[in-house]
Image 1 (cartoon, one colour):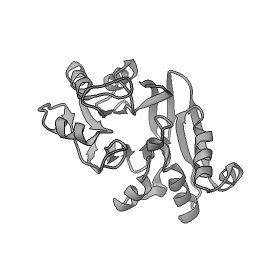
Image 2 (cartoon, rainbow, N blue to C red):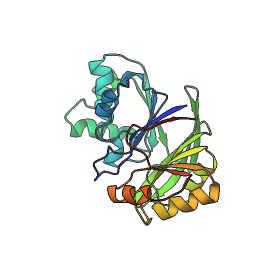
Image 3 (tube, rainbow, N blue to C red):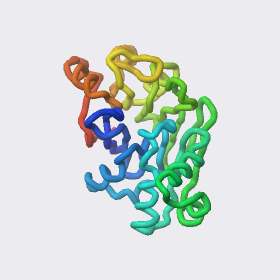
Length: 239
């Protein structure tokens, strides 16, 4: 799999908000500015077949309408796009369209070829478009449910989460994990450097830090840990 971290920052940073592109066709999260970043990096948004949403916060969902309008209105193609996310994700997308004064629910259904898969279990396995995807609930404060995703038993993305059973399952089941590392010290909403160092040592797996606050990024850069990577927006690797 070819993986690119389109964004690695938390919302109040100079970096793009955290999101990941896999094989040019699968996105994990769609925060503010994602479409422009894809175009700036010479990606073709119309190749995207799936969008995995970890939770409903705006810095993980805000650009869904812009991506869909680019594909279905501007490029004018009608390939199916599957959006997988927590229960209520279909209504969330309709609400975003309304907030931006775009199409309403009926127009979305008529003009856009979208399939929604809504999650409400602790764990769900989905096989689609040649991918084996496991959605695992994680713990992101009061935001429930929130999910992390394992893709083909190779790559995991934790989404936003404190250290919890779900995060540990994701790390154990993958070769590389793209993990929330927002803070220096983790709390009930987000993991911190302390949590990531613990997990890297416990499982001896590679962790790529994301959703970084700028201060956290600078502190983590000074750490000497072969299993933890601090990278810039646009960083690419293969599994």
